[in-house]
Length: 247
Ligand code: NAP
Image (tube, rainbow, N blue to C red; front, side):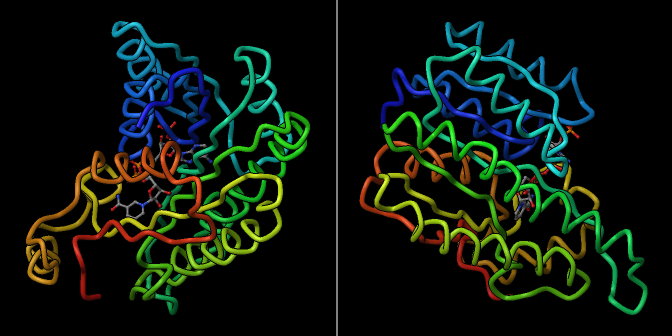
């Protein structure tokens, strides 16, 4: 699964799943753009790891919920790399609460970053991607919460369900241009996002996973690599990376 000569933009790549995706795609030969919002130091560490192994990487700050910042993000990739081949929309947040207690900003922040952020990045990359006429791969990181729903995550599940519907629609729009659009739906993956869960909750979750363990960021990254490199006849799909969880 080689990405030699390809370029990839990964949003939210300073930590967790995005970091693993950046390292995995770089190991496969891609030049990668590492995006972040707040954590410059962590993003630089990812870049340094890639460069120390002889790879190519740049770091660009942008808030994906702001369309003008997404345009600048895509322009940085165009200016620094030979073209754009792969966009991984990974940036995401949680603001969990039962709906009865959910504040309007908890709803809005999650929709703005997790759903509008995907729309913003796809919209910002579309024109240059179509102009290149060389096809491409868009991979959106959704969640099993967007398939099954999850108590305390009405905002997050709505955003991720939206990402799945958006993915299927865009795949239909862009198929004739050889641009594949797929989603990956992780289950419970050990990152900072899930580190806030109490130990007893984690233990309970594990009892509901057929493979008997939480996922790791590399489990998701390997699936993204497959979709980015070897999956030319797969589009409009959602691949769950959840160890077969019963939610
Ligand atoms: P994480 O460890 O909390 O990392 C989140 C990343 O997103 C960071 O790099 C962060 O950048 C970036 N980010 C946050 N807001 C942003 C914004 N407005 N613009 C640009 N970047 C932003 O999260 P994770 O667990 O790796 O999750 C990554 C993706 O997988 C998310 O879409 C999440 O919903 C999805 N997912 C995760 C799980 C799980 O169990 N962990 C399960 C299902 C789906 P800074 O470092 O600068 O803050």
